Image 1 (cartoon, rainbow, N blue to C red):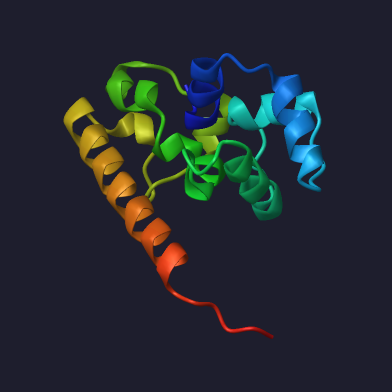
Image 2 (cartoon, one colour; image 1 turned 30 degrees about the vertical axis):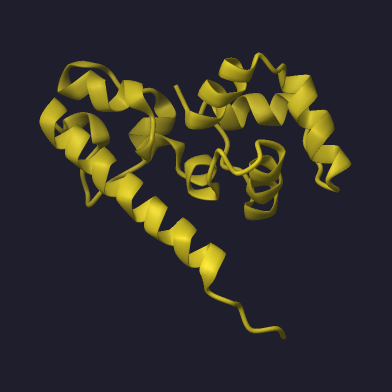
Length: 132
């Protein structure tokens, strides 16, 4: 399950509610697109990922929306025995499918991705960007 879907379900929100809140922030999102983003069938534009993060009050990072397969718990637990869906089949990690990893390797990749995401999130919050 993607981090976006997991958090949305935990809050008890519908896709329509998320889409409405994204629109209130000036973004454009519809229920179908959000559903495809949650199911890893569509990659969100960075601007949309930012709006979704704002809707969830920072509980979700842009990296979790843009690269949900790196954070999905089910994928780390699945290991090599499960058949990947079409979206996962196209995604490669250093030339290997995530499903080629044994469960221990998958957990290690997940931990590294979370550490990287945390570091990037810290940088984004604390490093001023130059104005153009």
